[in-house]
Figure 1 (cartoon, helix red, strand yellow):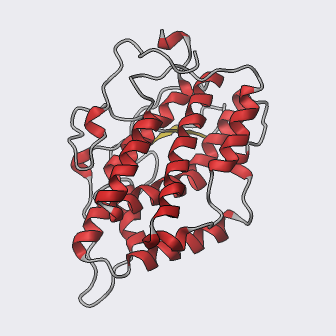
Figure 2 (cartoon, helix red, strand yellow; figure 1 turned 120 degrees about the horizontal axis):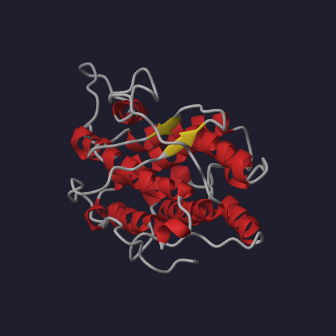
Length: 277
C-alpha cells in the first residue's frame, strides 16, 4: 500500500516529536548496516536517552572541537560489535532481509528528512556556510525513488498516523527554531552516518534486491566524499566556534534523539506489505 493504514500494534512516536521530550517510552531503533549476504554481522545503532552526552571537556583555555564532541557522544551509543571503542555491550543481530517496498518507504522518508534539513540551511543565515556543500541528497533521492517506482513498487504502509520520516522532519523544523545548536547535531549525524555506514547499507540492499544497481543516493557526488566531508566538518567547526558551553551541550545532548529517529526510519527497510496488515 502507498501509505495508508497504521500497522496493528505499532508503537506511538509522539514522545519523540517535541524537542526535549521524554524518550523513555520509545522503542529502541534497529538502524541496520549489513555488509552483505555472507552472514557478516548487522550493525545496529541503538540509543538510549540516558546515554546522551553533554560534550567532552577540554584543557583550560583550549577551544574544544564540536566534531570531536559529537564523535565521542556517537561512539558512546555504539555497541562493542560495531566498534571496539563502543560504549555499549555487543548484541546478537537478526538476519538482514530488505524488501523493495520497505526500502522504497525508507527512501521516501529519507527524502523528507534531507529536504527538510536542506531547506532549513537555506532559511537560516547562521548556517550559510553549509549552503551548496555537495553533500546534499534530496535531488539524488528524487531520481532513485522514481526508478524504484518505475518497477511498479509501492512503499510499505506507515506504522502510525505519520511515517517516521514525517515525524522526524516536523521535529527538525521545531528544533531549528528553538535550539539551532541541537539541529547541528542532527545534521552532523544524518549526513556523516550516510557517507559512512549508510553507503554500506546501500550496497548491501542493492546486492540483495536491486541486482547490484548503484543508486544516486549513495554515489552521485560532485567530488570525492572525503573532500566534501572535510570541508563540511570545517564549516561546522566555524559555526560552533563562538558557541557558549551551554550551546555546545545543547548540541551534543541531541545525539540520543538523532540515533533514535534514524533507527525508526532505517528499520523500515526490512518491512513488507504482509507484515503491515
